[in-house]
Length: 253
Image (spheres, rainbow, N blue to C red):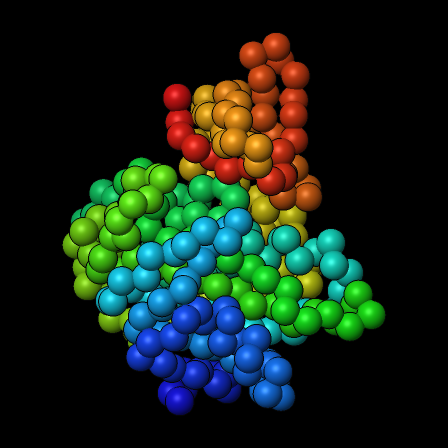
């Protein structure tokens, strides 16, 4: 077990099925949050909709576990908090002479130069009386290797920014940033500030996009905003607004 410069424990593994799954096992064994679970390799990493997440060596694979007090409806807000933490961390390492463009793709992806370089999976692993929740924030960032067989073009930080970031260096920085942003968010009290920051760097905002719906259909429209509940506001060709919560951006048009 290694330590950051905070008092948060970090459980490190050479190989594991999933850092999110291990975070649940640790909780079941009475390990109290907050803590990190990190691994050199995952054999059963997953993303949204239980999709397989390719986890090659050299990338960051970690889960941050914390307790949140509040109503369950605020939990989806953590996706925006976490995405901003990853963005701020990558910006810290970005060379001053780099022209790379880093953006956040709704609902949970990190984009560098139009390539997916990271993602987030948030799971509620325990709730008590709908007011106390233990949350696992799974974070994957392609530091040096790009996954194969992806539905969206993939990239990595090394190739796009020409900088080699070691996993433990990245961990120390993202730990600081996620704690900072959780403090700003303040269990949802300052969510509008978080959402405003996220929207300022949103990938394909105000552009025509194609979204993939849960039933597999595709729908085109203008990505006009994000509503207060975190839904994508899509303006269709008839000028009507639709709010999507379970879709994902497939591509820009």
